[in-house]
Amino acid sequence: MEASAQLKINLLRINHVHLNSRLPLKVISTPIWTGYAVHIVVQDENSHCVRLSIYNWSSIVNTRQIKSYTYIQECLLRLLPMNSCIVLLDPWLKMCHDGEISLRCESPNTHLLMIDFETRCSTNSRTNLDQLRQWGNASYQVDDNLRAIEFYTYGLRQIDEQTENSNNLNELQQNRIRFISNRSACYLRERHSTLALADTSIFLSIDDLSYILESPKITAGKLLFRCLSAHLHLGLFDDVEGLLQSRHFGANLLDGENSASVAILERESQRLQEEITKQRYDICGMLREQTLIHTNDKLPLMFIDLPHYHSECQRNDLFQIRPCRVIQTNAY
Image (cartoon, rainbow, N blue to C red):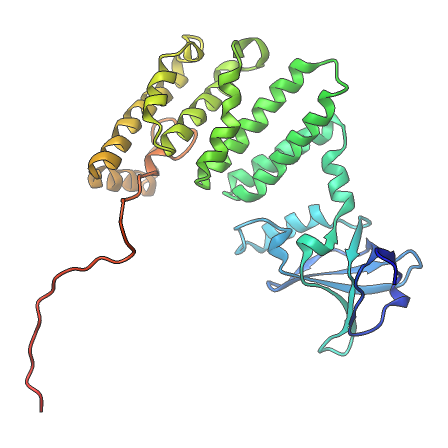
């Protein structure tokens, strides 16, 4: 069989994996998640229909909210909506335990191409860019950071596509900073400090944020805070002190709420240095924060949970040997 040969459902052999082949399909049912797999009904160009079972679904539904059936269903409806087109690579048609034949996909990250979803996320349309940001924000609000990162990344790719043929570069730059700021917040939540630092480095390359940002005191303040937080997560305390004194943190960004955020950064920088250099941990402070959370009292204004981040203890091995008292017993 030729490489990447196109097949139809009626040409598939049962209990056989058709290597080096692809099967174009259209989704004609609402996806259903059973906890083990995602099931949909698909149709080929000859209107032949069959069930498709997608296992290892977490590869395409990149989320930790696996306990929420409603949330998973919403994600699946975005990925595999009715009448959307997909391509199944190396299709496998098998006889199931219920006696029915079904297509089975074990590796959706490599063998399932959601071409309509990819097209929607890369289409050069202003509405689509706003939709991606809304989806990312909704995912972030329920702590589904991995999913949010994916939407923000799609948005940044679309901005790159539009930049090549756009006359409104200021607006695209505003959107780019919003997406980067949001994605860096997700990276920080997931403790991917290096990625957050790579994203927020754009802040250091711009001389006048107030000129290009629509709401400089809010958007730039968040990006500022996340930029410095990434440095703190990586233990770059000297860099943090230098940045706080640099021209990028002028009076237009350090008044009001932003000033309160910078005060938190300065305090947390000193705390983390104590933890790293002297291994001194403020247990009372940790317990006090947990108490505030459980009593629903408001914590100081923050854009990420920096006070909940602590330096890791430095250990030379995986085990710790402690002396213990040996208790002798009489043998019978």
